[in-house]
Length: 407
Image 1 (cartoon, one colour):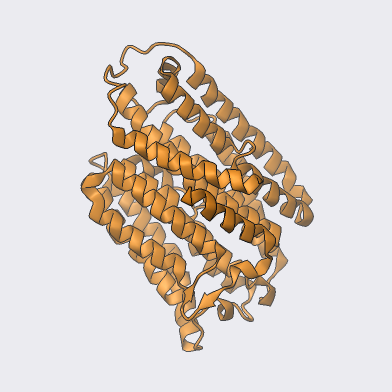
Image 2: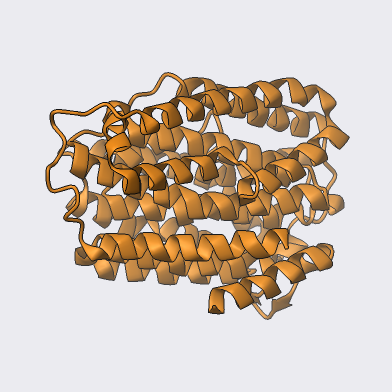
């Protein structure tokens, strides 16, 4: 019941207050509705990751501690150090618990992308330090469009958006189940949190609207292309990774709309994605255990296992964004903000929405099919209680969140 009362208070606060909910700071720490949700999700995903991979508990504790501190600070220097420093425990997690012998390639991609797109961010921070500016609210005063674009490139790579996403599918394929849950549920939110803090100060900047239109176009195209690509993919982990890119590209549009309704929609998208994507990767892990394959063809055998069929089906429906789930409301808010800004983007967004619906319907059709597979693991019913406990915790939190959101 704690989650029910907690979420009732949080969502009541979220939808009864205006933009001030994003600006409650104490010293170099920031405690507002934005990071309260992200910190809560961090604890939840840490708990699920720990139960799925107990042999890596110290790495998970280190990542959780750094993530909570990252979401709590309003100092860009500390934020940058935490955001890049968390790669160190992730490298250890990939190297010692990764699934493939060539996993060093994904680590190389992550490192190269981090260095290339982190350098502009670092240069901007050094410049601000020389000016005596460290906090979010003073960082963007009189910043022109070029510097702003250079700065948010680091955040866009962390999300990642379309065009900067090439490292993510490879990383998820090579990551252990706990690593994928941490990466999807927590680390992708670093970029979103940085964008939220950045766009709060857009009204103080001297921005060129053409650069924003270009970023909007890339985000809309990414949402469209990811839906089309997901229709062609057969590997479950790769499918979830590309689906995440589409969702994050869409959430980025709400961020940069610089409207309260868009910020609210993007924040809800980050929360929904942070809850649902780790579940999807956990189920991908179960699919590998029970069906001896990560290919989508393994979903056909779930029709004879009602418990797993219902769990998989329900999770994909949540990811699709049907009401009353949180992704549905986030999409409505982001669509509304974009309609008030650039109506021409609706062509890409509607097509992307249709493509996303098609590949989800394809998955749902596979799940409800009762075809029997010869290579199904006969021990499918002998699941450790720990796995079901993880699912229970996730669904309990998720239902409480949705219930009080629509109340």
